[in-house]
Image (cartoon, rainbow, N blue to C red):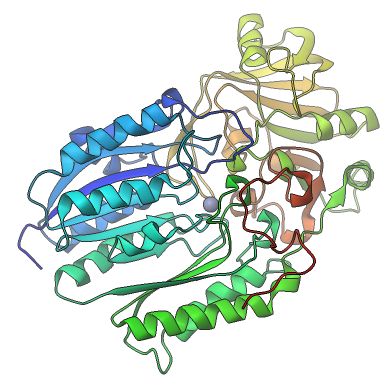
Length: 509
Ligand SMILES: [Zn+2]
């Protein structure tokens, strides 16, 4: 490895739901948009305002000895609609200018399921540019969310591919650390070859859990298999990374489909293991069908928690998950639970800046009529009115303690907890999924004392609320929304067809 290796750091990370409103520059600026020295300083901060890949990468490089970071621009934000293409074009110009210096390597922090308003594969566009600018000899490692949809350019342009292996994503930092370790091996002369195999399976979000005790985990089994096989004959010593990409259905691209990506020291091993894992995925194809609980049944279960002999329950609003591009503002579960008189419940986190601002104007203790979605009522986000008391207020930045955001800071904007009869509802100004108990605790709400907790999250809440709710206490609710796992609810334009689970007759030659 070269002394003081010069390594460019850059990234573009957002998961795009084709059916959600356009994501614009201020969505990135409100979360993670850092350039140059400020990017490196934030990556080394105690509670960095970014997901943990780059902090993990930088920490591992720092620990391994002297190097020369060349920090460029990292743009990262919560899932939303396709990104404004003009903003992405501006980033492309910044990256291209920054890469035009002597370099030994490049580390790209990517998601893999980004869209722009004009480009269905911005990661591929970006990596193609990076390779063109730095030339064939500079090593490029890219890391991905396992929800990434993988194009040819995502694989053929780079020297090492590293994706998350856990869902909920508890291994973002490990992904950055592994990327640093892989990059150092490549810089020391280890050769690499990449292969990928894609299946006509678009796994609904709720079928992609990986935890050993998760219910129905065909995807988790594939990840485990890849990690096991890479250490066995005939692959021993030849495999540098195995990544199983589940993809993100709602991006609705031609690149969707469960994909095995293998980085190996020789092309034959890479291709053979990718093929073996694809065959293992195909053998599990019947298990990629979601099983949700109807809203009527969920309401009955919530009411029944009034019996102290029954366990408390968590209700996941999987169809309105801001972590999948949902608005975080549908009222279906809240309305049903209010009407049924559910008690001792927490509901959050609901994105409604107008209501949060009104609560701040009124102050703690004020009684008023809470009017949800007055400003944005449309589509799935219908209005709801209910008598409310302002219970507590918060300026927004939350130090996260458990789950995917643990150790970081997430800014929810001006926020409030409202008491609506038996339900306490957290209302926020900056859209985010409810993945950390801190999003209730910061308002003085006690998750342990609640009988019912409703979370706007598809699955990442399991990594934060696991100390209160085992998998058997989680109810995935079938309500309408932009991130519904019931894929037949959407008008797909670009998914490869036929595909599982949408079509009956699907072949994989
Ligand atoms: Zn993900």
